[in-house]
Length: 563
Image (cartoon, rainbow, N blue to C red; front, top):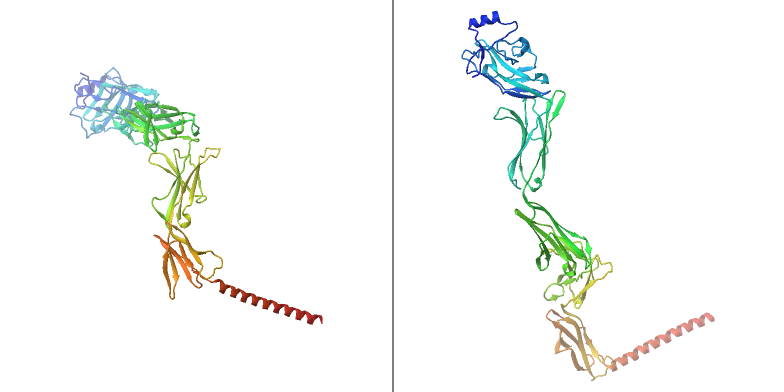
């Protein structure tokens, strides 16, 4: 059981003995009392140039009067319990002594003797004990001393990640904490996890003070291998003292990420080239399976289960390839790479609407080429229109279609029209092209309907002649013949040819008809040879008389001028 140095003012004998027999400068001696102590840590660490807090509380006897003025005294510990010299007193809260820049910041009337020392130097390294002076009680706690050790370098701080077997999507708490000997001047903590994290000052279960910053983070694959570093610097007289940097490297398990497929050599290749398709990925644990797939118009095909797929290029190898990687936490698929063989054939196709095409119908005609790679857009030309806009679309199976298209309104002139489209690979420097042709079939009503007579020379009454009807139409026309009567034209026959006797003054026309419409020819009027000859003779006579008149007029005028 420890001894308590205790002095009661009301014990007259003890007081008289101290006054009479005590050595000069003595302030107290130690008496034996049980059950009362001053409670301080046995050892306290301080940083040179900073401040330090001494946690302290003391026990009292019933005579302690908390309403009366109380003073606390810190002094050098000595084994000579009888007396303490004034030179060994470092601080008196009465203000009479303060050689060590100390200040009691606790409330003595609440039995709290917590003390702060400012501007600590190696000179402060020592053993300290405490004395209390109160009107009801004066006592020196001789055996409840503590050791103050002053260090020149700051302490290592602690960097903690709370959690084990870290995995992506897991939420964890990360903290950086540093020992804080003085609440008045805590260390500054900085790290690379987040700027301006909130600083907390906490009291641990052992009574020590800790300064801490803390963040909650949700782990991703990018945190695997990520180095969290934290540093602390302590304010001291004239600047700061830096503690060694703490570093912790995260180990985070995750499914495959950043999966990439690459091809060598890249760009256009020719048939016979040795190709290497390589697959890479980030994963923890490592990749357990690599798989290569090819996209084509027939669907997806697995081609190998190796990390590097090697083959010699043939025209059938052209296409889109991608890899898939797997570990115990999942799988991921890369973006595709394209094997582009410039001497593989490009065969264009021409697309027109399905069904019967009719005149005045508006249709869209397309010339397209399916290609495996978006960068190999072929050159397309056709005879429908110059400089048609070229478009490239991605198909569902991963291939690409390059096309040109035009919208036209059909007429009878498009029937039998041949549309020709040519395609050329952009990497083919020889200019080789592939060509496709399609012939349009357009239905339309009869056009250019006409009637003619055979023979076509001058005819005489009663001769047999043939009237012939012609027309352009799809589907072909049905023909009808009409003859002019006293009041109107009447239908007299059908068919292409009508055989009749030549009778002057008769008038005929034909009509062509199909499902889409009909058209009438211009009429033909019969004129006999006799009538025609008389008219010619009359015309020649008129012309001859006019010529003779002109000659006579000219001669008469000339005669008058000469005479």
